[in-house]
Length: 172
View (cartoon, rainbow, N blue to C red):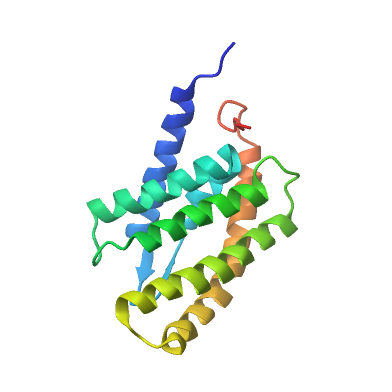
């Protein structure tokens, strides 16, 4: 029997909606950083459906969230960063033997290259602030959020794996 794409798309749409809600309503946003749990639906999408769908869903959530709940001017660099986060989670966590080392590697890769690297570059381009002025609070945020992200992703993955087979469908 052929698998239906409708169910997959509905689940991805639900995860996109969750990401928008978590990012826009259940996070603390400051001028150069955001503290919240918007990463969880991205990680779950990437774990279940792989890097391509994870990247697409993260990019769509960024664009839709910005259209529905604008917070400043739209900048496509942040959409690229969101997409790369979904891709990185998928590369490290989809279809592989799930373990804490993979979660740590994915979170550190995203924290260093996407959050500290690309997002700081985008903020520098938008605000014109000096790199050190942007990096200092972002490094502190990364140090605090990285263990929280690792624990949350690990905990959610353990819950996702215990769901009935229809909900944890894994696509190649």
